[in-house]
Structure formats: C-alpha cells, structure tokens
Image 1 (cartoon, one colour):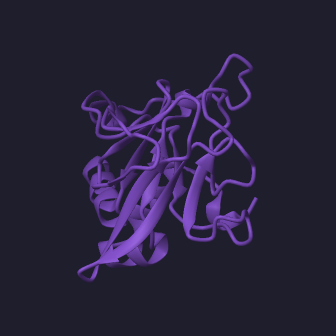
Image 2 (cartoon, rainbow, N blue to C red; image 1 turned 90 degrees about the vertical axis):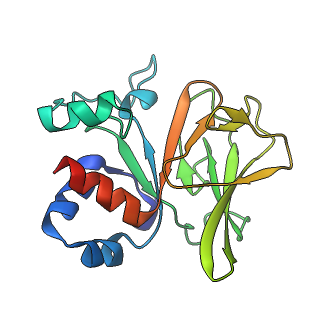
Length: 181
C-alpha cells in the first residue's frame, strides 16, 4: 500500500497537533481527512481488532460525537499513485485498488468516491455513490446514484448502515485535536 494513503491512528495526529502550530500542521497534513472509528472495522473475524486504552482526555469528545475513540483510523484524502483507473476521483471501497480501503462486508468493492473541485478560488470536495449495493448517505441523507453532494467539514459519510467516515478539512481537524490536547 502507498505510504501516503495508509491510515494512521488519531493518536498520531494528536501528537502532531501538540507538537506543531497550525501552520506547521497544515503543511504536514496538507489534505482533508476521513476519520473512521476503529470499532467500525472490528468485524466478527476480528481482523483489525486491537485493544485501545480509552484515555480520559478523549471521553468528552467521544460522548459529544466530535470524534470517535483514540483508536480511530484517519485517512488522508489523497490519490494513490497508479492505484486504479479513476484518475480524477478518490475512490472508497473494499478493493485494495481503492484510495481509501475499508475492509467490511457491507462496503462494496467500489462503494463511493470523492471529487476535488475548485469553485470561486476555494477547494471543495463532493461525494458520490459508486452504485454500491448498500448505498451512501451524507448526514443520513441518502445519495441517489449519479448524484453528488458537497461535503462540509464535520459531515458524516455513511457507507451502508454500519460504517461511518467523518470528513474534516485539515484546519478543522487541527482545531478539533487542539481542543482535545
């Protein structure tokens, strides 16, 4: 797997946010992120199961739904080099050729995708369903096949009914992490 697109634990980014000021963090992270709760990945097979110490500093944020637990995975929203034939989109799915790989049976091989656009000089990301079997929703609003929706920082992307990613701009992710530090 391309190191640029490998998922990290939230703890990694929390340490960066403690060490760097906002400008340094933005240079280091440089892209929006998708946060996936580690428990979302722990299936019956336990393939991704690890014991995560739920440290007190996270509990309030977890309870308020601002972030998942300390064991959450964070994916940078970047295109893997030569990963697949979809050069304009950041693909999300179960296939190892996707840019964001989520190994859950409910997730289709090619489940959804993000498109980066520049509108009036600002970068935006839109999400579309990739004709998945179980559908894609944003903040519980189901996307129809062929339609896309602009993402705002903090939006929840639901892949089927059991897997949820949370989209953050790098700046908002930094500010969230600093509020936990």
